[in-house]
Image 1: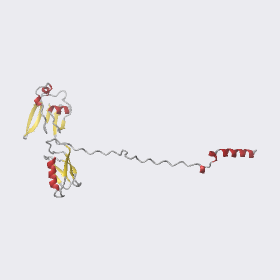
Image 2 (image 1 turned 30 degrees about the vertical axis):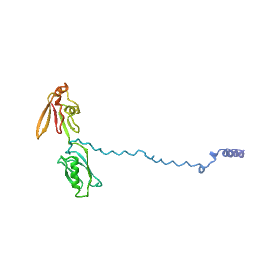
Image 3 (image 1 turned 90 degrees about the vertical axis):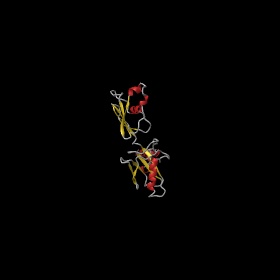
Image 4 (image 1 turned 45 degrees about the vertical axis):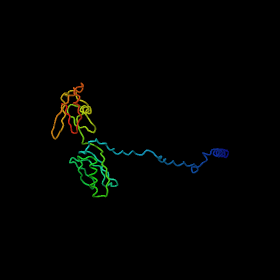
Length: 217
């Protein structure tokens, strides 16, 4: 009987390959596939774009706080971005301090070419205006957003008031004053907002000049 039982067990084991395999015979798992390489042309980490150059107004001259980029062709050690200091100068590598205020970009380019010719032969230089912070007008008093505003395009009194968010409820709109410097003297010009709103005295909506201050009482 015992023999018959053992023969039956052996027959069952032979009929089942999964049970008949020993641990050493168990097939190994295939190795994990390595991560796929990045596809050609895949998006890389974005690089911030350089600050574009501005197109200055026709009457533009360099002023304090303006940001310039001075580029010497094939002379990287001389090239640099420069902020115009309150004393009107810019600082550049090797050239040290250069007067810039009151010059056009072209006049400054000529001046830098002359200065660099003492160090290198036939210098080629470009002056690029990156930021204009010197051309400003000001508005103060009873408006929503008083403060300085850039004067990069022709701007009238009404346009500046609109840029400042308009007049406040209790503003004295009939007695607005424009302070202006003419020939070294301060002059004041009157502006009646109500007249202009009613299409009267349209000539008072003058174009603002560099440094004008609008006072809204």
